[in-house]
Length: 466
Image 1: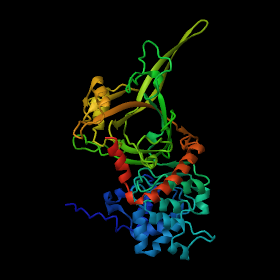
Image 2: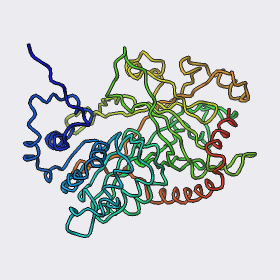
Image 3: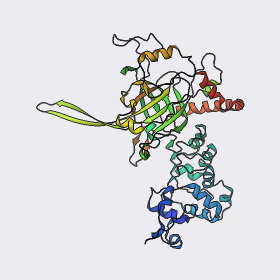
Image 4: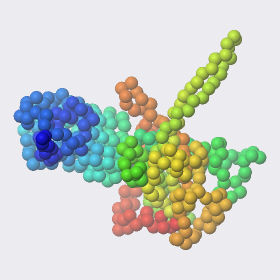
């Protein structure tokens, strides 16, 4: 009978075995190491002899494995020093500050190594052009600072993805922007959140027609086409809204919201399709009776759900001198659901079955594109009269049911693919970044004075709005 050989654990695999598979399979992930049977593997000696380290240009692996292996065996440093042709590196989930310090050349051990390159630089991975560290919770602003150091990084690094690296901040990105002269994309959010979102929250017309009710109330019908208000979000989380106040700033926090499983099976394609955020305005006007520091700690949040793209077809007819031509044009409509609680600042975080929304069995599916609907306790639709009553009586008991506004927004993409398969136009104008930089400088000073309060300032404002 056949015998099953024990698969090697990731911690016991020779580093060259890992790297050889990476070279031949760029999509190879660290988690796949345990899924390989080593019946057909070559010996460790043969792997070492045949592996061409200098030829690797694209790799997906865990720096945690590399760094821990290096700590236990200093000779492993020569492996990293051999990756002189590496241009693309995916470290999702596993990137650490320690690894960024190591490859920056500022690590004491790399500085004293005798096997460094012949020039005066101790940077590792000198030709690195793109690095992804999605959902790496051991990355902080200190790690980003070390990533910004060195002449090789300044010359070559063009793309950085720190999406859902929640221990980094917008402030921590400024060394990258300032020192990396060829940086093209600094990503702090998934690509599906880049774009121009068409919201129904614009001001009513100055001269309303008979078909459009005048704004006589605090609440008015925002479902009119001419009341579209554009919200623009860029790859680094910078945003700008088409209004006068609370109109610019950046995404201060972004986090994954677990979803309901479909009959117990996880949907890998829907990963990171349901997120919560926290917005930081750089032009928030302090409300009457609020403390001055609320300008820096008013951070409202919403939940965001990615919806499947919809392919639409339109027909146009043109008449010539003797013939009539009909042309069919297809277009892809991208949209998202935005969920916002009517009380407080925190976003709704209840799980959602994303598949049921796509297939039409979820009550959110029926929300028309470009409109808002309201739900009691997230699932029960409520009428306009109930909404009016709720808005006119905002100071209800804490036991009052939660009402959520859910808006289905069309999104116009910002991205324009270039000839090399990259991205253009996804980064914000420099003036928006500089306004955020100035705000961040002020906020750092306020943080120093308010340290004793910690995160309670946000919580205080949240309670104030309940």
